[in-house]
Length: 260
Length: 263
Image 1 (cartoon, each protein chain N blue to C red):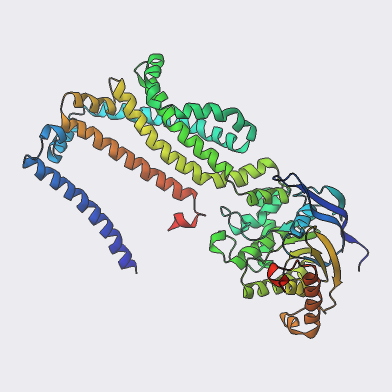
Image 2 (cartoon, rainbow over the protein chains, first blue to last red):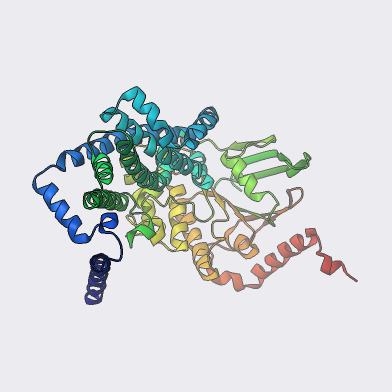
């Protein structure tokens, strides 16, 4: 049994790698056959060389550091604000009434539309990017948290009341744990949005950061470096996703579907 | 009958206003009920007769529109504790934390609540399952934990709302005889809601038969079967006679279906 499991896991990894290698090969071959202009899509080897050069002389590190910083600050602050706010809106009907129209309007406005205004107010430095990242993640986290609280099972809330527990106890012991899966998926969605926020903000107005890096080399028609930026964002997204998966498993031992 | 009443209900009435038509509906009409200390009393009736609603009124989950309910005062803790229908355990809590939850609601610190809850896990036959989560338990075991949670608060009266309705027939019978064993050990007053005649007769000292539209008491039948009762008692002629008597009461009250009305 154990041997079979082991083989299965290996098979997953093996075919996963094969998929990547296969795509790379097709890409490389079609490019070298001259089926399209190299300046449009570059080639895997050229991207690799560009990456090695920029990592080798260290010119890319400040860009990565700045992007990570913007992402981390904006995302963490948005969690700190969005989760408690979402919980309050979900739990207290009146807070919901007071905020729903306002937040719905704000949420409906595409974040990118706000970037020029934010730059005008906060400049082209770190602050404006942090604000964009914050806004990008904020609504996803808040809305899913609210939905989670509001979908708390009535019969579970009834149990606290039946045994004479307070509303505050019901919130802590019933609403909060049953909302946790929602909060975690909100964080997952929010992380993705935050990453989009980093790229779009740096893209439009910045002088440093990965978004700026790939925007700049796009304009210079250096497709290989542009691709390096894209690949880095991809890796970034995957790493964040995996980290969140680990967190989810820690928190949700009681959910049968998560355990397997 | 003992001198003390665990529960005394007078003229309990429950009215709803239908949201669509705006008409007032009488869910429960003037129910009087006395339950002696230590007695096992069942409320039996078809769905819609207000038996569960009555139980929730006793528990304080629903406020009756008229009448009053007196529960025998106890020195400490709660007067009553409810055993709910299926799926009423918190999936995010272990069995031990679920069983301790009633005590936590009563303001007992969690650590102490766990210590006090532990013996009840053994009492209901869940030894070794304290650290399991509800999804790892069968339906019957979940209802054992549900019962333990209500027992742990050590209330004077136990309110049970069709606790075995979702179980398969075999498990239900096992749980019925287990309940009698536990009732015997814990010496509680029980008010048990069910729609199954054999369950009510097997468990109870008294079966209170209710009818629907409006919900009301139509009969109060004393069950004179010797205790302790083994499951075999269900195959005695006395048992069958009680079943027959109650079945006739319910049949009599039932609105015939259109098929039966046809000539």
